[in-house]
Length: 288
Image 1 (cartoon, rainbow, N blue to C red):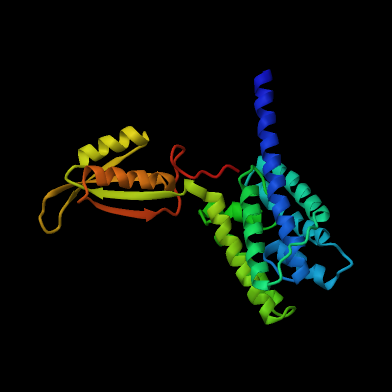
Image 2 (image 1 turned 135 degrees about the vertical axis):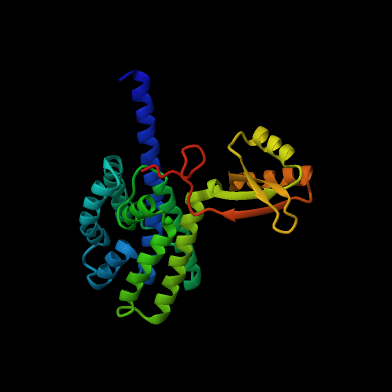
């Protein structure tokens, strides 16, 4: 390998370790600063580990977390890949150290605010971790497997698995604590999706216009991305129609609307969300 290749590889490793560290710090802050002081349950492996920690207070949370992760890492090796497995080992180590050492209290005096802040910190931390080539173990591994194999969004997997653990915690916590926990988990899932997808979320735009040629010209010139012309027919007029079909990012949506208003304010436009897009140039390709 050339010197430049080694340098590039080193930069990739440093970048991923930084993402794992930052995300783990935020997650640890949520666990030690809010969840444990309030005896909030959580979801997934974190939730199971917290429930056991609340019952056996002499044993640290990290011990239970590491114990539950052994079978999950075996699954990660089989279904996701070696790189993800190795980076997840690093991530699990960093996460465990962060949870052990970061014990800053969060000065809030309202349990609803505690639940909201915990969800924001935890969701942001998890999203940052998953932007790396690895994970911190736990639900992350299951979320990545389901995203790659079935295109199930990360936050949706997290919310579903977390809800199952909260049901188990019903027998060990009061109802009001569980309701606060549900708020935490919902905010966590929403923040995870927003931070992870960010402005790269794809939208489908369908445009019917008499000025489709000029619109096509402008969009191809300004966005330099693929555009499809669909041949259609008006059901009432039986007139041939040209429908422009484009997959764009959320950040480009405002500019597309400006172009349409400029070229043909009377154009018929439909904008819809995408569940998943598979293409190296425009898709949200899993990087694990």
